[in-house]
Length: 508
Ligand SMILES: Nc1ncnc2c1ncn2[C@@H]1O[C@H](COP(=O)(O)OP(=O)(O)OP(=O)(O)O)[C@@H](O)[C@H]1O
Ligand SMILES: [Mg+2]
Image (cartoon, rainbow, N blue to C red; front, top):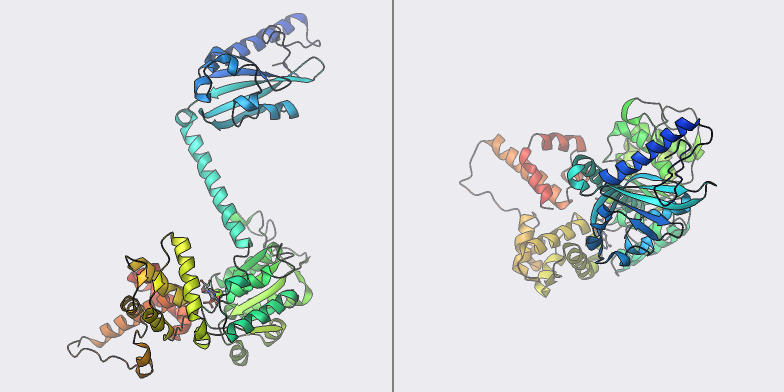
């Protein structure tokens, strides 16, 4: 190749280069260098080919000929003379022809294998691209370049996973059709949520754990004029208090050293034009409540470490299972923020207020479980359904779903009788009594022989209660703490002291 980056060729390898600015002997050395480089490549590479300005293969060398059978060609004339894009799958030669830019190193995978290749445009004296030289630098890169290739493959995989996750987070998963229920209470919730979708005001979803608040938040976004824009959630219970501010407002470049040096967009920015879902609102620390209120009032945020205000356009949907009014009275939730968010409150009823929906829900949930698990859909006998219908469902639809998932996992057949339901309910710590007996439910007495040291029994009871609460809430620790009437922090303390509780989280 010449100093000006051009390859001049006549009959493909006679005169390789010419630079009129060079003295004669330097010129001949350069030509020699170009020729020996070409020869070096021709010998050291695994194969070379040339295509003309129309993208047709016009020449291949002996080494290249070895690939023909693997590419699907018995005879050379079926390959040479034909458009390269037709005879070599996934080739980029025509790309180089079109842009005139070399691809110095690339991985090419096709039916013949994976190759490290190089593609260099050939120009005439006027600088016009008249063809492309393709060089197979290595075949079997998986052996020669193993470390590099596996690193590349790993990065590619990480990237596509991250992309997938991001896409699924930003896309709403549910629409109103996903909110199953035809009882009066369910229809009323859907009516209110549909109306809220058309408004730009904040929505506040209030209801017990597992009633479908998150599902409704997605559905409201999907039915709103912002449906084409991002849906971004922040779960107050899942993000440590100290990180929440950065999570919401972002970090300016250079504000920190290390991982955050480049700065990071906050959720307000990510949700721009779309919906910001504030999940577990009641768990928001006071310090962040103040900043959130200011952001909502001003319509502007200030990323950490920056002194610039950035305006945003988000629609806020918040959800909580806590009693916010009570929290306001106790002083643990700011009254001004409460009023700011409580513009369109929607009360999501617990399952026990919409018992009529249980049959429909069982059907829909079983269908979903089968679709995800790939097995046959469960069919419950009338007795089995009646047994489920008589449960108190403190964990609501999430708990019902967990029980059905357990049934699908445990039973060998898809036909489910009341006895199997009874067994699973017992294990989940639900009353598991015949429907008519539910009203008479009484605590079972301790076996008389079970007299062990009191601290031991208490610890065991505590452990069991925590396990059951986690099972009922699908591993949701905030919700479990609430069911147990203890703080999230003290639940975490107790969990930290008990190694064997993890099984409760994996079975649900
Ligand atoms: N009406 C419904 N129809 C079908 N599935 C539902 C319905 N409501 C809830 N679910 C399912 O129940 C589970 C719990 O719902 P979701 O996460 O929305 O509850 P939540 O109110 O946000 O609970 P938490 O307060 O514990 O966060 C999810 O799997 C959801 O898909
Ligand atoms: Mg939720």
